[in-house]
Length: 298
Image 1 (cartoon, helix red, strand yellow):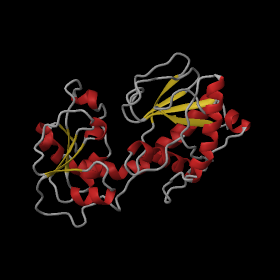
Image 2: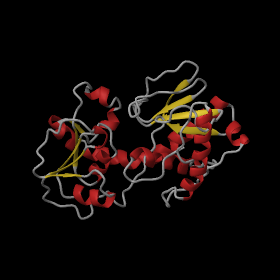
Image 3: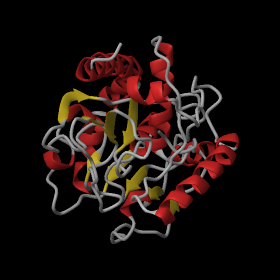
């Protein structure tokens, strides 16, 4: 289950990319538009019926990325619900599709965005990077497999036409909403809500990209454009608490004092970016094997 495609949400992009890779690997995978779960009551029964009617309309308007193999389904049969594996992003509360076999993919820490964690037993959990790695729920299993999926956009993010004399900064707020702005805004461009082509053009001429969002794919895009990404640290998170995997820190400064280190590791970070597509396929293969074994489905 995933929201309609938007280029402004890394979480949405990788949900669609997961569906694509599953199909590329020979599985029958579909995207289902987002729906909510309603507590049992007569009032909510009618609300749910109304929501199903709306879903048919919403599905016809549901946006996908045309270069990805992501067929859309809006009605699941009894057999689908019994014998398929449903993947919910961590923001989904409960089991709105009433599926037997539920995987939750932690694209952020459970409860971070909603303030609510409503999961059940006999579920399987996969993390994206460090998100939710320590999460435990009695009767369910948190996998050791990191389901990291990457969508490379090197047709947009590259150094073709990049400025030789870079100046100024770009910055983003995104999930860092409410954090104190600590850098000079006099020569700084906010990239939030801009199209990828616009962001790439900006990254090709500024020297630094400052992110108030602790975890954003735009840091990697900045590296691909020859710009140095700087994540404004959370005073409650050490370097390793912010990002435990050293590979994931390559080329990114966690604070202004790490700019020199990030610059030194830029080549290694670029090499890693281009490895990530192949790693994504390997990660999804592990995900398929483990999920089928856990739920005993073919």
